[in-house]
Image: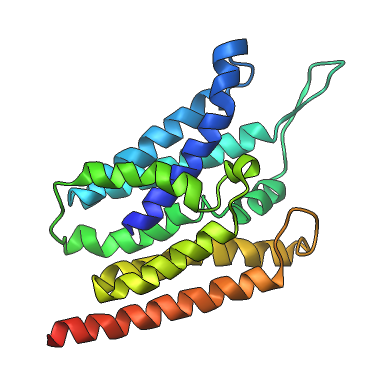
Length: 234
């Protein structure tokens, strides 16, 4: 769950980093640009809250980040007539299609679902929440985000992450299971792209990458469950 929130925060941070230099240089041109940093702050607060064992606060922050991200998405898709200045708001179908293909947005509802039982039966938190915040910029580089447009590390970096967590099962099987869950947003986003007929288009990874993600998720979850059983017997 924490890895999901870290990934969502990383996606928002990458988007904020994309618009922030222009905001500083040219000023704010669109209202959505002001919400980008707000989404990042709210998502980061969810990471801190959940890491500290404050699951009710974490759930509220996660849902707030999801709502703010959807508002940003709607505002970004608003068109403005260059002659009349009239605003043309996008249909809900377009907003839904774009949201469903965003792998950094899916972690928020998935984390919220996983968080609900913990609000009733809370597990102990950790005082090292800063370490989880430090994982956010790492995720910007190593997981699929908007920042990859300039650094071009994907999909190789994600494969390295999968391999690393698979080896980590010898140390902590729970982390391996969490990594398997982390791939679910990527798989859902790929399925959404498939439904839109986007596989095979320029800049879009296709069936090979989808099945790589599915295989990786199955391998991580299986290894994690077996490792957890082995560690429980030890």
